[in-house]
Length: 293
Image 1 (cartoon, rainbow, N blue to C red):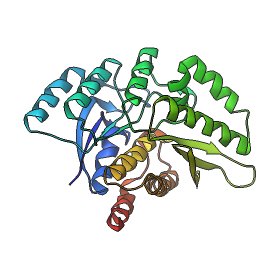
Image 2: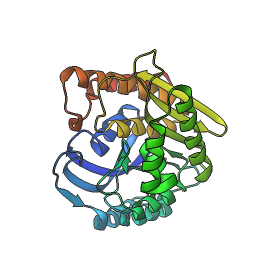
Image 3: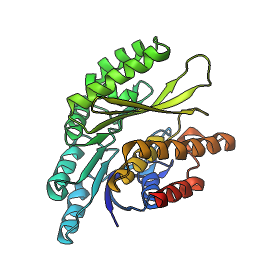
């Protein structure tokens, strides 16, 4: 069985990070091997939370894995408790990466034109270095702009983009994706969770994949607002699928189908956005699709 190291936090409440990644990756027929960056009482979107930073514990875990000859087929990195943890991840790459090890970086730093509380310009710079070691990155639009321009530049570009409509808006997003692809020498840059309306169809949510000169959009009708953990679920499907050799286009289609159903149920149940989406019911979709590959 393929093994995927997942470097992310463990949050008790709010279905995100490792709580979301482990069942999804398992349903994809891949062994999830978690390396916690922090243990939180609940995810940081709530009005308060307790966080136990695992920076000083990560080396001890890696040393034990080295003793056992651990050799992951892929590495997926997500939430970091601070910029110091990037050094631990570079150490992880040095210890465990081989020539054919897939690296997917989800540069968790902000959303909806705002940065998270953990953000600093130092963290952003370290995220850029991590992205330079990845084959695939999965930022949302805010994070894509942070990687390219920093906080002030992100805010300026985000506000400018809100004034653009229709196909011109999508074209601007594609330019951003191509800049990411070129700057970080990626196999694929994936920009997730793009709200889009052409004025005729219902509001859509799109995901853009830039691979070389090729741009591919996948859209689904948007229901509800923004929910905790959807980016983690998306990146988990992609990382597990890519480790298994499933083409990127098929991975994105799987992720969108899975998330659309999960979000729809969260809307119907009236779930608070911080509590995440009702994905557990739809894990079978990943298993069934996985069996067809």
